[in-house]
Image (cartoon, rainbow, N blue to C red; front, side, top):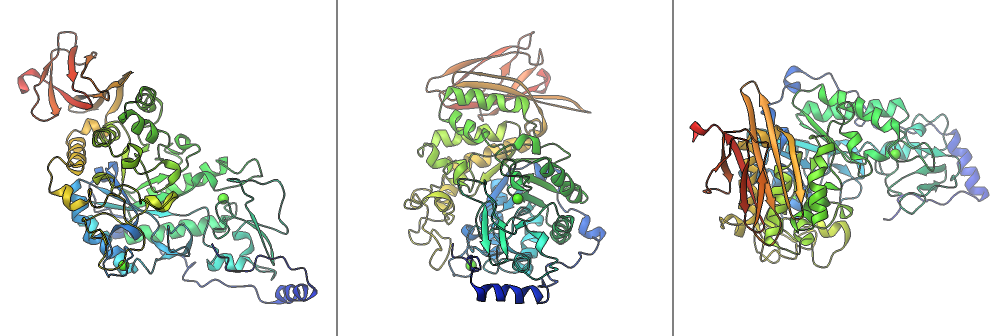
Length: 548
Ligand SMILES: [Ca+2]
Ligand SMILES: [Ca+2]
């Protein structure tokens, strides 16, 4: 967290003279590799090589630094990730969300972007990125990258240029500057204003991540050009970070301002100008408003993550809330059990105390409910956090590929961070060898979701929750007719019988899960009873009797 520039206000005479001299100096410049206009996209750049359903998931959120090292420096990189695409394809993944891959100051999470049109040198080159896209597309997998609209790194040349007393300074308005530090601001329990020789700047998250002035149309136009830069290279979309924090209107008006929604609507117009692309926004403090088609179109379903995990562990209130969520939330919400941020909870394995049944139920719950599911890398093998790390680092450990206690198969060198606490017990190699593994379960439920379009696209109907049981229907009406899939969960410790109603009368319910179980006959009123063993779920598809 060391500061790269002195943050002490000039008070000495010498300092004042220096400031006066600086004011006479030429205004600072920014290399045009950061800012040159992006040429209009060609038809080939606009076209998408992916099938239309790719963006309905399942997605995998990947921390490139932690996924696979290709050159032995102990740091995951793009070539390493490319070498693992077959593993992801085999799991049934059709989309990747890469945490920031652009050149960053922090050399850690990557959210302090230093260059919006360059790849983080520790991760590789633009050519490596192009190869990743090519190889992912060849496997029917789209690649969505994290994009930082709200802030850059303090080492970004535009911020360095903005921090200058020279006038006129065309970069000053790119960031949020005041002559002196304003009073009355508190964001996440600290003041967001930081002083330099030239004034005070606003940084909502960290003094090394200054906020852009998104009321400046030049900044917005530049961001839109950066998006085109990546879209023209073949990127399939973006995950937008911290969308609740874009525009500030005062000490009591810094979160989810109306301008944020308008700005994201403009962003979406640019992204959707390229067919078959996808974007999803992050704003824990108001996600549903962002999912509107004229804003982001999709947004992470914060709170539903805790409902899903709580339900899996058999908490009746969580079952009720998990069941109710999509009765009001749009189906474009992006669902998950955990992610890279500690505020969204520990890794799924750790949230349920390593209970295999609870992990399997959580996975099935969010994969079978509406929403676009996002797995967090390693979730599918039950990876735990690091034993002796805290906060976000605990969640961002090297992927456990093998049981090797020193490297986890992640690198031939020294891993950049401590390994997951359960690398010996839970790793991809062991899970791939076990047909009953958690990974095999994820793979099977993802395949089930893909095989029944109603699970991917159907509306949510008949949602009921009672104690530790819930059931719902997914109903898809197309030109070919109406497809109804019934899903029931028993999160409890005893077998339970669920009463089914409002199903198409006279049809048969074919068991799609679990495999091998008997079909269920509906009576003339479309009713049936289904008994579910403790800690299990069933998926039944209504089919005409003669189709048996
Ligand atoms: Ca490396
Ligand atoms: Ca902001």
